[in-house]
Length: 271
Image (cartoon, rainbow, N blue to C red; front, side):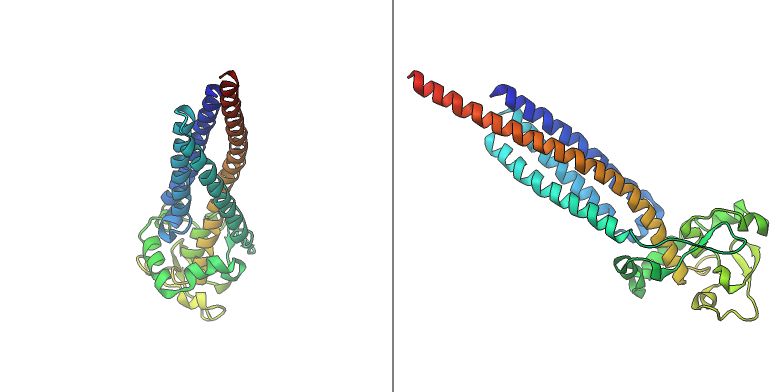
């Protein structure tokens, strides 16, 4: 019995360690500019990681101190958390499966279109109320200002590999035909009615640029998708390891119960 309990405790210690990458993935998302402005995924990931840690601690204590009700709680609660983690992994994969950049002639950076992305993500940025908050958050960062310090000549800028956020929010769409002065200041063409984003562009360096454009929303979603996919890799690996740990824990728990029943039977037989 003691041996099985020690095994259960050791297994749950591993489960405690597995909560760290989940919490870390959530914290990493929270530190990224776009995710910190949108605030969709990071808190569910952090909360789920903390719950895994708490449940694993309960299993660890129950295993080493032979507290049966704690072990039962661990088995039920961890199963629920594994299912929730699997659902989160599937959800992230589903909402990030669509969307990609579009190349433009003589440009190294890509252009982004809002309609390319999943309905769930589009709904997060279509509302004026939600977007005004996100827009204020994004415009307060140095995402666009950094471009002016890096690129002085038009050809250098056109050859740059901009982030989706920079491409969508810091310059007018290429199809508008604006003339480059610097990365965040462009001369309007005679006819700029090719797209509403062409009309939404402004050279105002504080609240203007293309933060009101659909291309900015699309660039934000592309950035989110890239970061979510990276976080999802961590979640998938953790999910697989948690399932393995859980199965081993179930086997150890069953063996512990069998040993306990055999010990009681043996004591009854000897008496």
